[in-house]
Length: 253
Ligand code: SF4
Ligand code: FES
Image (cartoon, protein in one colour):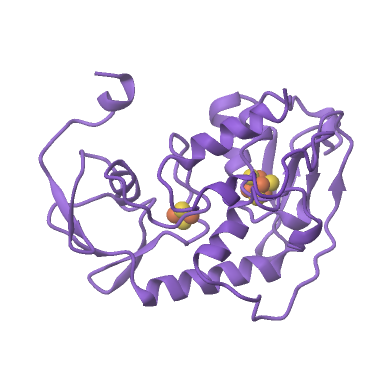
């Protein structure tokens, strides 16, 4: 039995999600149990192995008429959970629209188009426009680092880079500063610039961004349209995180 399997004591508990019986182990969240059972719950800020964050709210499920984030809610035996319903998917689409209008997600000019989980989520949920008025952010771009650049106007504040840097890379390069609509990504270096941080191209934090906010320099537009991740894969495919990570690292070789 591997280390990952040993993290939870096995029991025969199950809960019901959309009429399917899902087994779970003690301490598992609804999200982790669903993914282990091969069932997709839409998510943006969740990544297997990183501490759950609960910020994007795409993973909301209905438990007894209450909306709960499945990535932070522990599974309970006998629970009735709804996930893939028109009401929840409509709410998820609205949240995705809000993310699009909050930042400058001008996909036709973004290197991440076709490899972007936010964009793929919009397609998945049938989003046709932003619906709400655009914020037109003007946050600072940081191109100071030799091999990595940061465009804060595309950041969705998922903190995947923050958690990857702290929990996997052991560096604590990124953080979120500010409150409410002024919240933004900052770099923990004396100057606040990426160039003065410990970030390296090989770090998980340099590759985990689900949108086009953190990009590896000099590798833009290498993958032709038609061969990008979401040209070949549905965002709802289980285990896609590994494909995305592998691809991100490969393009840097
Ligand atoms: S830079 Fe990317 S990974 Fe980091 S918080 Fe923003 S969207 Fe998330
Ligand atoms: S994946 Fe659960 S809140 Fe983002």
